[in-house]
Length: 249
Image (tube, rainbow, N blue to C red; front, side, top):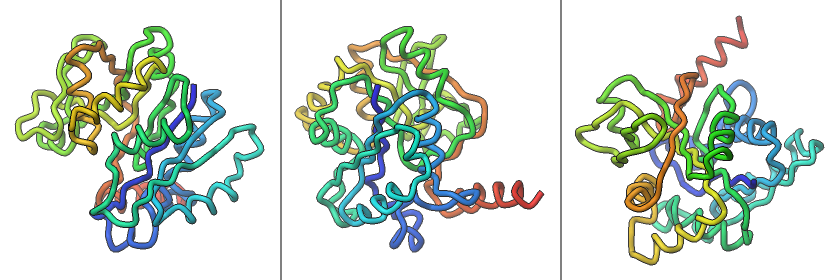
């Protein structure tokens, strides 16, 4: 299995901070967000990781890759650079995934993680479920309120099977949301290109999952530990303050 970390966005909701620093490189607890993700992925025995970013922030990710202390652990980190310099020209998540698969010639099961995820659990249960069922599997989290769920892709499940997916709905049918973490079998990687060839939305992964479950069984693994989508300044301040307090105490 390989892993792909999506860092191609410009994080306009976090401006002015992200005019200069990409969201996955924002510090939390003394190290950048992406470092937590990479550490978790490598702990699962995944040794090949690709970071997908844009031309504006490529140099900053290259610098972090050179400095990352885990390089001695036998993990190979590569990078794919989308030829975009600002939000108006961004690829979008699904197009970015397809571009990375093509550029890196990925031909293996693939763990995909959005680079603005901050979580305190291991993805081990997700990978175990995926390997046991060989079905596309997503990481899910219960945000606890219908109002809060409106900001995310909302799923309705029966057991571990996903029955329905709503992308940022006005009237959510559930408080269970997708975290932007997915595992796909290699035989299904061509579905990203197929989806894009149908002139579908190239950005939000939720639209891809809505399209996918029309003919494909999709599973979900629900986590109860801490999970945050660092998409706004308020949320970033909350996570930053939480870890700063823990360090002081």
